Length: 109
Image (tube, rainbow, N blue to C red; front, side, top):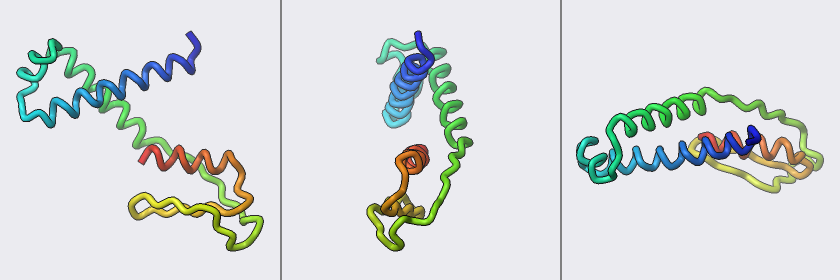
């Protein structure tokens, strides 16, 4: 199996497990009761919760370098992205790689 496919499968599992953890926490039930209803052992639940938290910790410690360059046409704004207190402006002439780095960084927030 290629490493790209393995990473995709791992991320899919983590997303599924994160939803389970969120569902359990929002259910108002004890972990024991929730797991019993889901036919899931508590040890499996806690292992999955641990993996989700570890993945979140890795994500919060990931930094992306975004290089800034002068826009080709000064003050020719083509897009502005706002996330909370952070604002990113993209100007005409910005290369695709820089835009993808910005989008990946925003996705991690």
